[in-house]
Length: 380
Ligand code: HEM
Image (cartoon, rainbow, N blue to C red):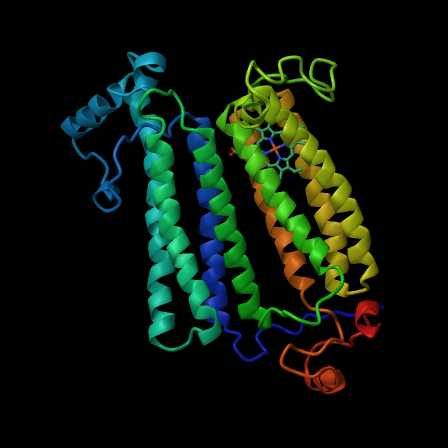
């Protein structure tokens, strides 16, 4: 029988049910922001609102004249002039509503975070230790809004699309916010993360989580350059291991970020490297003999393989909206599973809490509602 290092929820000091559920709702909002953001990009809607009005922009045009004015502003940018000339009002409204919806969701998310945050601070309910982190999350949320505008503004002059560098920054920041929210929520459910006496598998699980984030950033370059719509063959690039046009006439270092075949190759091959790393990590998680980690030993590779399969199907179909969104949703699921596995691995079964001496293990085990502790890493 396996044991687990995870105690029953909400039994440790500093755990708080209401704050936990608050952060779960925040995480759900962040996930939907990521998906709506992806749909906004895939429907080519992201440049339809050419101004940044964080507060007054909450009200969309309400009259025919208001809509005409918005369309007139859109007519000034290169995307309209070179790609969408003659666009009808109905077509403009379609792309406008996607972009407005993404921004509006951001405003609602801001309130969903801010109002309970102020309450938990003011009532003294937020654990002192977590307060700086909650402030950081608040700051990152504001920064993400500014990065979003920085990204949009890159597509308003001289270009038809936003910069892939800024898109990658925006998407990576969204995942950092999601990861920090998830990590903090887990602390609010099970108690502080251990900084000492961790499971031996923790560094590997944490490195794998970081590698998934890196792969997500590589995916953003593929998305930003529309590189999923060229070389739509698999396993090779038209039968070749490395595409003929890899450099696209660019110097190597520039090609890494700006050549469409190059960014696609990097995303593909790093995906395969992740499969190998995921297999090794799964074996290590299984061998930890921790009941919860063993669940991740099965769940994580399943999510990883599904994600790779989805990536391949998306590529073969030249990145249509539905598959691309599913692939993005798969990245969210994989990232959260990898993060939860890493968090769980901070706790070696049988090890004392950080503030207890090593000999206190037995006392803790008998007083805690957690089940028995028998992990090999803790015994050694
Ligand atoms: C192993 C884990 C993988 C993860 C975590 C991942 C993640 C991502 C992410 C986050 C994006 C950006 C989506 C967006 O911003 O809209 C993306 C795009 C893409 N990925 Fe992956 N990916 C993985 C593997 C693969 C593999 C193995 C392939 C193909 C062989 C692939 C093909 C694609 C394609 C074609 C796109 C562009 C889709 C679009 O234009 O929206 N991915 N990926």
